Length: 337
Image 1 (tube, rainbow, N blue to C red):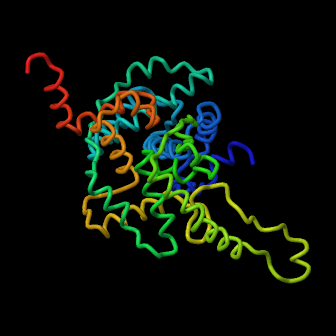
Image 2: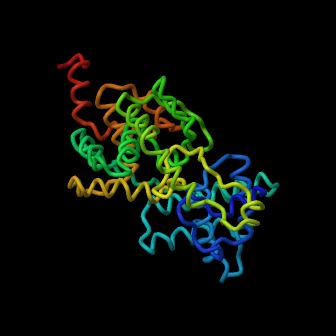
Image 3: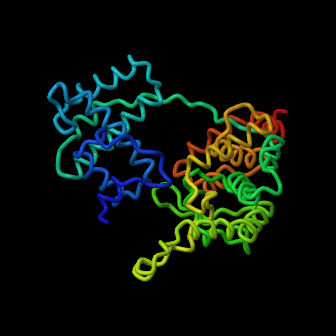
């Protein structure tokens, strides 16, 4: 399968794509470029594709395209988004998509500098991340019911999300070989295909070990039974053998790869079970990972590396969450007590 087909085909680990007609063919070379040259994830490609498809729908009735539109046309589109009550963050993201496409056109030999210089970036709203306290995280991780078929898997997932601060896609695409339980660390392939090694504690290491021993083999057996070829004599001899194993660490109830939507539903289910009523998602556990590390005295640069942030400004948002620690640091180190 070629690169273009890979980008346009569905992915288990990605969110459900919009209908094909919403993604004009003119975007295909651009998406191939982002995937092959910049190594962007499927989720990021889908975001660019949705934003630019929305823009094309606005430009087409006026006889314009992405390549023929002027800076004024782009500004008019962004202003219409504001009038439609889109958030500053959404407008900023759509502007970023336009700028990325214009820079792609420059790589392809078209001069778009004049337009790029006229497109201002609105300052995005900076929402503080939602954080659970340590006691709430413990309740969430202890929520799975002992004795259930998926108990060891679900505990391992919750422990690993919190222990390593993983994004949902990072956990769903992690392979068995990426978890080194002997040294207590996981290999993570993050945004832009950037690799990082994240240490995990004893709780997560033990939980993954139990899952690999007690639960995963049963899930693989379930998948093998469902994938078994037809039983007629001729078909049995001519059909290829069913795949009996998976390289992915976490599997679904049916033994298939565990996807992002299932992961979100799992976290929400256990949050409701222990009466954590605020919206809880896998990303909230990533926020907890970062905030609790900083609250315990971890260096900001270290947390940046563990999260896989390319810009420390992204990590700095967590310093605004733990105001108690900031006051303690100021009181301890400032010469004017």
